[in-house]
Length: 331
Ligand code: ZN
Image (tube, rainbow, N blue to C red):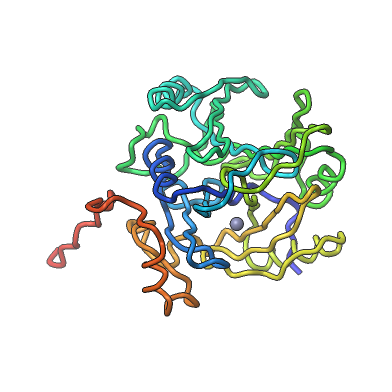
């Protein structure tokens, strides 16, 4: 069995939104992320599954949504991931504050472990943060997007979970998943993962013993996925987690990665997802996100699925990424 000692970083985070069209407008036009995949929820094929990320959808940059339009509003609380935090260059903090304010998005700025953090919510109430980091990593820049390269979002910085107690989670994160306790600021405990050269290296736990449990629904995080190298290391994690007494699912084929799921303490849903094969498995890098992709099991239902999914964009929209020029075969 091939085992990894440490989880190297966040792979993706999945949340629940309302209208898919409003969701797209916010993440594509305001945050400047790239829609890297339009597909459906593999367990509920009449609902979209939208993936945003850097230009290639690199692990550590991917925020995904299930737009369940008729679900009640959720409420942040204990037992869930309560904030999603992206890294931006520190010199861009004023750019982002102004950009959000100009769009009438209320923001709050705080300092955390010495870095400035802008806090706001997406149109459906999901808490989003931007951390200004001194040495941001370079991610694959989305060309033709609305944000100049110097200010662009550089993948995840971290995610924050709110829990009533720390101990059990600390044991899981450190003893089994190989994270280290990086720092503490009041009731916030920061855990660090092992790949500093990739985005999404921190997982924070805020301890609030007296707070109420969160209520899942619109504007809340559904689950957080951590990265693993390949299928063999995935099996290694499944086996280690099972040996520690946790109920872990079988490996599920999510087409763009393969996944196992289990519950962390207080019912926070964790996933471990493989880096390969990635989003270019069914469309070219240029075409990513430009049309609805379905897994094989739903291709025969395509007509009905397309009829039932609400339109993502206004009529007349043309995909912003221009196709590569045809090669001149004479040269
Ligand atoms: Zn997932």
